[in-house]
Structures are given as structure tokens and as C-alpha cells.
Amino acid sequence: MQEYIPATESLNFEKVWALIQATNQTIKELAQQSKDTDRKFQDTDRKFQDTDRKFQESRISIDKEIRELINQTKKTELIVDKLSKKMKESESRWAKFVESLVEGELIKLLNAKGIAVEQTTMRAKKYFNNREFEIDIIAINGNEMLAVEVKTTLGVEDVNEFIEEMKEFREVFPQYREKKVYGAVAYISVDSSANKLAERQGFYVIRATGESAKIINKENFKPKEW
Image (cartoon, rainbow, N blue to C red; front, side, top):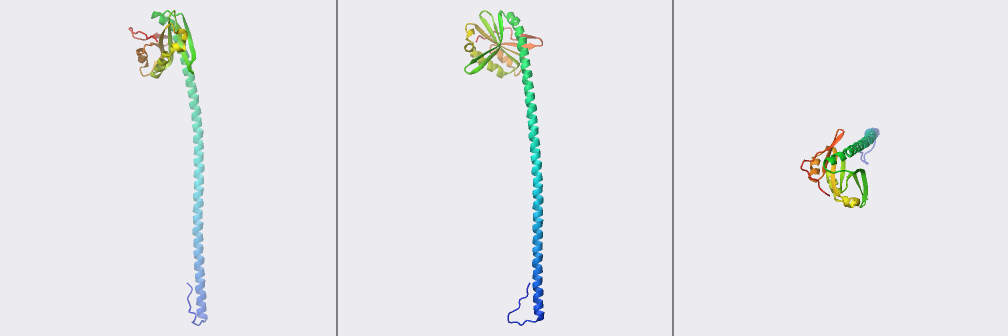
């Protein structure tokens, strides 16, 4: 620090020299402090730049991972879509196969039950109350007819939906109002004992096996007239 000299004290060379040295020391100390501050600032700035660089690298890495994940998701969705399409196509082919199989055996099966079938119709469609109705197979004789719902795999929901359709059948297809209307479900495989539910609801139950089909209702079964 600069030495304080009272104004009334006389100056000489030694005192002036001491004052200059003290001033120079103060300047050096201030310069050193400035250097230290500048070094600390540079260190801080370097650390900040290093942190910013790491952040940018991390963001780039995350962006890359996100893009890769999005691409993988798109590829997965594409694969799922293709598999879903293939499954639907396979299901459709199986359903058509079962329909053809059942339709081919239906006359023989119903004749064995005392129903003399005159004709069969595949995929009878009708629009009613702004929705589409479709009966896979209709078998007809003089005063009786049978509506058949065909499924590759028969589930409880399928049976319940068919029940609702049969409740409206005479309204949807008024040309059959004067006939005795029966219902049947046909399938290859079954879920949750849906076949037993169908029988309790008064439907004929037809199971397709191999290259044939057979009615599997109990011997004392009586079909419901809808």
C-alpha cells in the first residue's frame, strides 16, 4: 500500500523514493489481481464452452437416437400393417373356405335333421336402418329357412351379435316373413365355450373338420324359431 506522508512533513529523496516504490508495488498488486481475475474469467469461459460443447454433442446424440427410434417405429408399424393385412387375408380365405365347406355339406346335414333344403344362397346382404346386414349362408325349403353365421374362430361376442341380427331378421329380409326362421353358427375353432352359448340360444351348431362338417348339437336339441 502507498505510504501516507503528512502534508506538514518535509520531503527528502529517501521519502520520495519510498513513496514511488510503494506506488509501484500497489500497481503490481493491482496488475496481478487483474491477471488473476482475467485468468479465472478465461477458465470459467473455457469451462462454459466445454459444457456447451458437451451439451451440443449430447443434443445431437439424442436427436440421432430419436430419429433412429422414429425410423424403427415406422418400420415396426409397417411390419405390423403388413402382418395385419396378411392375417386379414388369411382369415378371409379361411372364412371363405369354411363357408364353401359348410354350404357344400349343409343340404346333407339338414336333410338328416328332416329339413329338405331346396336351395342355398351365399352372402345375402341388405342395408337396413343405415347399417349393413350380411348372412353368410341361407338355406331354404318350402316353409322353413336357416340363416348360418360362419366364423373361422367362433367367440362369445360373435354369438351375441348374431342373436341381435336374428331378432331383426324378418324386418331386414321381409321376403322370409312367412317362413319358419332358424339360425345356425359354423366354425373351425371356438373360444370360451361359445358353441355351448349358441346351442342354449337355440342355434344349430356346425363344426367344420377336415374336409367335412357336422352338426354337434345334443340329440334332444330343439332349434329356436326367430
